[in-house]
Length: 249
Image (cartoon, rainbow, N blue to C red):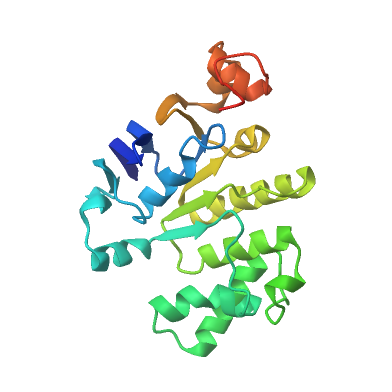
């Protein structure tokens, strides 16, 4: 579904992504993990076409988005649902208006049909009846759920999640991970989750990859990841101070 070939990107002479290769399986949940500051969000922004690579390709359904013009990019983005780290809700809009926003921008549905779709999406994430509330009136976990509802509004083929459990307690984190699992099972979408939450990654992933120093240093089944003897991966899983990862970098 998504294939990344030789992706390279530098900022002010610092190489953030270094000839990166990764295939994201169709209809599965792929979790990309790695220490903070290793380029995970930069990778996500490349997939969205928000950043152009210095070299390499990002193929979605066989088409290289890095060579698309703005019209082609906007058309492709309709097939991508995105849930940002802080949910990125519009503070001046109600919850219902937030979920309706992609439908009003990208479709010609009547207001009545949009209202029905918003009701369905909020119901799917367990938030029926909060359409008229403002984002400031709901909890962080609820905002994450609204973000997922909005990401699903256009029935996307691909769902992208940037650190979906950041700032949540362990119970709410597990609830959000379960919701992502349920959403993927219902929609059959291809999911990419960017995370540094190891426990959450094991709860979610069908396929895992680890990004470190701009390269994919591991990819494969979560069981192999959990049982590896690789010192770099073991240090990251166990959160140890000693090892190849320098915590003061």
